[in-house]
Image (cartoon, rainbow, N blue to C red; front, side, top):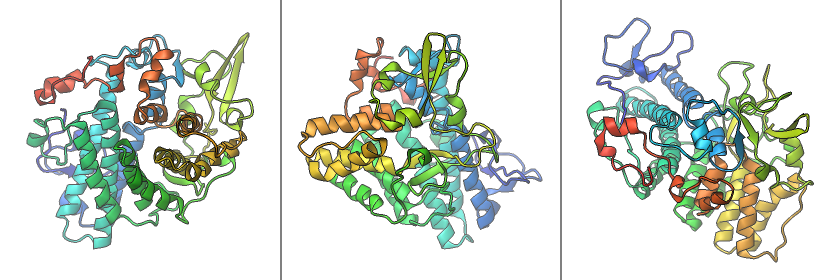
Length: 458
């Protein structure tokens, strides 16, 4: 496993922005004039906050949570997106064709960049732990945020790769010889880490724009872990607590769902520079000609009835001659953006997870209001309380697809949680059962043979 090699961590801060730089600079060298050692960084709340802001920026720019990563990569991997870049050489075409191998460069990039951010989270955890002067409230908050951010990255890696290494230190000698941890043990470690994060964080946000996580964000992540573990009552308790929080209210206007000011947003990532578009706004955009990268599949478009307002509000049509394509149009501002950030968690996900959780427990009447909320907002009518459990679960799966297309790989994770990934074989000719996991990158297996064996099928 490729882990960077510091023995005495140097957290490089730019003099202007006091934000973290690339991990390649986290090496054992003399301290330049524009660098601050961890001992100094974590004695001061302001500089410690700057390093934490740098981790958020790294996740936004260079992890699987970035707006141009999981959404398009898993959209083409499943049945939500077609891909038109037939000459692409970065591995996306092979994902679209479900013909990826362990040398796929895009899979490696997702793995390496995400472990890079995990490394930074571990450096923060070590710095906070060793600090002797940070106020206890700041120590708790910083540790809680770092634990959450490390945990969400581990969670998505576990969902994509299964058994994975779980580094919790910056020690190079330890990290380069790590063994994989079985997938179910990863979930147990995540449960413990997220529970600690919940205990350290407050409900109140550190920033009114909700660009830093709070306790409720951590509760949602823990609920997602519990859902994967089929721990329905535990997940129900967490999700119900979020729904009942006065911090959040359901957004009834479809045109406002992706505005940064919404009280339905739990957590979002701010674009790098003032006026920048979100990565989602630019990734899916095309007009005036055939798509050069991504368009919504006919299979996805057919999942919407003509009455569903999301088809009108969140999709755009592009017609060239006799051909009509659909593109995702959830984020509208591609220039001079002042109103949109990249939404990671929103209340609608809490609603639909809670509906699924309650339906799994055969609490049909209790589940219906949560799935009907997004349906009624979209103008497609409520489900009847005479519905069967199996039909309700199928409807919730469909509603997840209609609500969250092109958002952080929802389709893949929702199908996987439901045990329905194999249904993709009916629309994806090369889909195989073993495609529920990606291959471990060959480069990593060569660097650290302890990561063997390779995932089945590869």
